[in-house]
Image: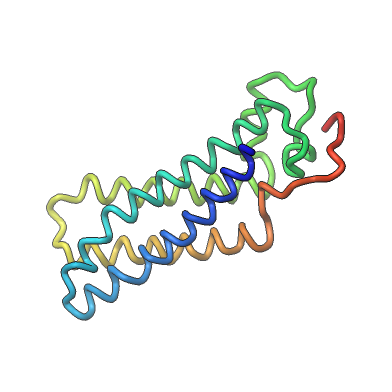
Length: 157
């Protein structure tokens, strides 16, 4: 159930990054203040869903959930806890998730600490970050899904 929650959060993050990348940019180009005002809450919501997704993958490693292909390929029950936690980003799928999470963290940080930037410029900055996130997350979901299930479930990773 937890891996499905993480996968669902990742998909919602992709949708939010699409909104973040398009609507504020259109608002900045067409002068639509309502669309410009969407930039901050959408970027923060994207960060929240990416944090949930990363936390779910971390939980899968900590709990030795070998039904997740990525966990079964990169962990085992003999690994100490610190190595299981670092294995979350130790291979391709997890490192992409970490990159997407860091990118969303920067986007959220820009929305929090950019009080002096004009709203039109801020909307464009956040939109570019959203479009980059769309690329990362699309690649991750469609080609390198860290939450892919493995059946039958192996007893050991």
